[in-house]
Image 1 (cartoon, helix red, strand yellow):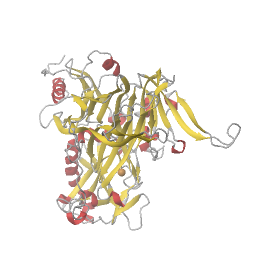
Image 2 (spheres, helix red, strand yellow):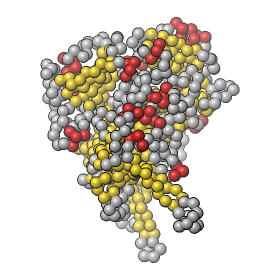
Image 3 (cartoon, protein in one colour):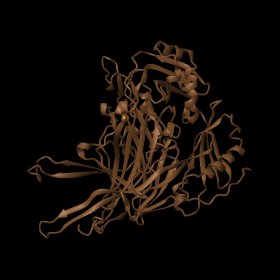
Image 4 (cartoon, helix red, strand yellow):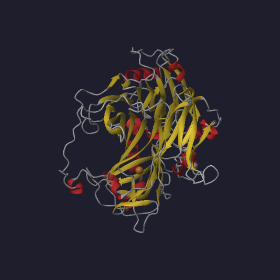
Length: 636
Ligand SMILES: [Cu+2]
């Protein structure tokens, strides 16, 4: 039992995000246990700090589970890394595991790494000489961008806690630096030794000069004046209620969670008393770039390496969200474990969504129309050059949808005069390299209870033959995925492939299992060679679907420690036991996202590109569940 000062706390729901008071109380426990050297210059930093969510059995068991926090600590002087779990309930350290970064991977990037890397890079004589040769002597106009290093084998690199640094020119205070990449040059920075240990200087190309400052009227032109206002009014207020983190709308109920690493999570999503999802989140994403030259290492795991939740935006009414909005703040911490509130991080509102159903009957004369509406739970985050919005939609007809909105600024390089096979010229001499944004959705399904199974459903035509003399037959081919080894699957648009998550305990009025169907979007999975170092680290991205048996420790599809991880952690390890997934408590993992061949229209700031997936009730209801929706107005 530690001596840490006890901070009284009202009891949160086990799934509520950690509060500022809890972060401080957990930090006190770590201080008392000697895990943090105190004082401003103490070298131990929090690379991650969040709720260690109680296992499902405990949450559903009705007793109050132990309230725990988890911290990834890194000693910035020695590089020593540890994974610490503390119990707030029992006021003690539950576990403190010292990691071997060469085996396990490094802790995520720290806030303080950005400023430190800038200083260290600009102090390096070799890098300065390379910049001077390119004509850049005034380094105050240079912006450095620390990029996670990955793991490519050379022990000289991989034994270090490191980043690789690219440079951009910002001539004026309000210039858009991404418009002016300094290509061919990278500094490799050791974050512990605080020095540049290698400079790669492979070629020189002119730094593109055209301004990309879209705030500058000289660049964008005067604002157009031809758009008349659209106002959204809800004179009686919204139809949802929010009580703490518990959200209710129509028959839907759910709990909202938020974490510095994975951002928004949804819990115990139910319709009436019927569970659909125990938990849903996007616990990883990887953005690999397709240029094999000196920047072959460019591939960010935004969640595991940079922590997307930590960079959540504060949203503004009338700008980011329209209508009757309810906001929730998010609480994350800084490098020293001190809480930081992000006001208005999560936006909850309702949207009209056009027609729900409509028919004019030629026989009985009925002419009816109903409006669809959706409940939106969303947040936006900025990770370096890109911005991502994560929007969960819940519809009146039981449909659940996730839409990711990717916007922001392309990561650029120089476009050579003789062309570039891996990039598009997006402004004179400026290249947008082809890349992928591959997200992993973790869908802890509970369709009418915990016992679920997954069927792959393809549709195809049948050839002319006996029983099909005119060749018009269309059939579904249903394949039950019964083991983890069999459930690594790809989308197939030509077969309309979907995956149906069925209850193995409850059936509908036709005696068939109640279910929800996952409708994926078509698109390639990871395009990096299966034997590449990246493929080893992004095993989850090799397929669009995985199904695993629920295990509270299997949270992160690229592993717990993603930064510089050597590979093999996460999904490949999760399925190594090849467990039975038929009629069990299962988790569905879905990889999705675009392969982005940049367009000139994506420059200098990219209109939102959308991707995602849909979960639709399939025999979950016995008929259209929205017949009782009233007409929108008396005259309809
Ligand atoms: Cu992109």
